[in-house]
Amino acid sequence: MISLDTLRADGIASNPIKLYPHEYKTKTKLVKTALDELISKSFFFNNVISSASYTAASHASYFTGLWPKNNGIYDHFNSKLHATTIFEHAKQNGYKTVFKTDFPLILGSYLNLINGVDDYLVEDDQSGLDLLKKEDKVMSFFHFGQVHYPYGFHNLKYGGQDYKDKVIELENKYKLTVEQVNLRDVATETYRDEADIQWLYRYKKIVTYLYKNRKDNELFDLYLQGINYFHQHKFNLFLEKLLESLKGSNYLIVIFSDHGEAWSDDSFGHFNTLDEGVIRVPIILHASDIKPSFYSNRIRTVDLAPTLQEILFGESTTPKFDGSSLSDIIYSHKTEDDRDAFALCWATRMGEIVNNVKNVNNGEANAPNIEKSVNFSACGYYKNFKCVHNYQKFIDRGSVLVKLNTSDVFDMTDLSLPKRVENQDVKDKLSKPIDDFNDIKQVFNESTDSLREYFKLQGYNV
Ligand SMILES: [Zn+2]
Image (cartoon, rainbow, N blue to C red):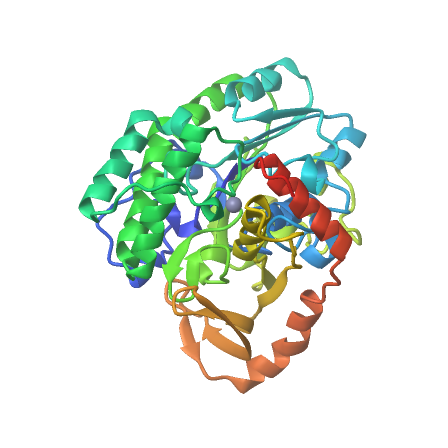
């Protein structure tokens, strides 16, 4: 399994269904890559709905085949997994398991996401590839963080001088000055040293400036440039090495993404949104016995684990999954109706939490008031409609959070161009299923411990 973090389904050049040309005025063209070459020989699901718009919750659904409320992870870095992972199933079936990640804080032991993993690697692709060669029967997972911002670069080790040059070019272009690092901006996805934090802070400052000034087209252009950079400097070579090392063996490659990226009044990247470009992700399967095809009827990320369970372990897929196997679609080219899908977004008030930490560090408060996550929005898909229920909403570009209880309905008949429509029947039909999907009981102690752990790992004493 390969996870390309933050890659929209239409962030793939050879995906014919593209939302973003209708949403942004962009200058950057996606270049054809080794991934596109592989897709021409693979089964490509290009209309997959992710269970959540952020990394941990999305991966939890891939690894368990369960909706967030049934696997335990529903928010950003807070709730923990309490379900069996695909790695545990693999181990029971005699596989060695390998897990390589670029975001060890989020995709690691803290949230129980690596239960069943034998070898855990951070930012080390080569050791992962070596283990693939060494082991007879292995299930491996490679996570790549470069498509996430800082777009294309991930950190100084990977981005190097190109990363610095880009930051300086953008600071000059927008006349931004370099200031001292603000604590609020240093909560990151991986371990970073001081220099890395400084450059990330400068990049985030550019992103914040562009967002506040409604320069969504520029932000999206940076995102597309990051995708091209990632393939050119990292992933083309990785795929070449992977295919070389798999030569002569019996293998299945699955490539997917956890969520996409979008910049608009309702979307600051991906954490606070169920924008279609954020929750529509790709899944690609490649093996010698899989015939190449595109499949655009809707499926869900929870469908992958039961599919792998059936293909790899030959086990019946129900009732332990919320998803169901795709093997008839992949191997018998059966066409199904769109599957009913759901996605959620909970907001963890990171800004407030970090401010609390800052106050404590400055001796301004006795104890941090770590809050639970906030039910933000959830959506459901039924036939050719999508209904987004907004429990709360950020207005004025993220500066104010207001309570709402409204629903928006979209007609998805043209997958490239969702149309906002008035349709009370769809709202009524999906109201209960959406509430059921999002019916999550929070455990306060667990949340608090997990957030404390997160900030301790960032070097804060909370
Ligand atoms: Zn992610």
